[in-house]
Image (cartoon, rainbow, N blue to C red):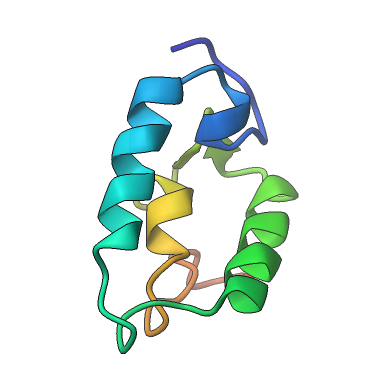
Length: 83
């Protein structure tokens, strides 16, 4: 994976990994899943965060596209939550 600061997986040329994450998101129940508008706002916030590198949040190590899909989860940066 090439290092790409403030890039999401789909922007970092990691198509296979992104497709795997997308499939996992699609399997989430409606009760777990954030709606499209919330998901989009979260990803926009992550794109502007200094802790995002190549689709991974350096605060928690997760793929932001997956974490942002969960309605109940919050930004892992406890001192400066973006969402």
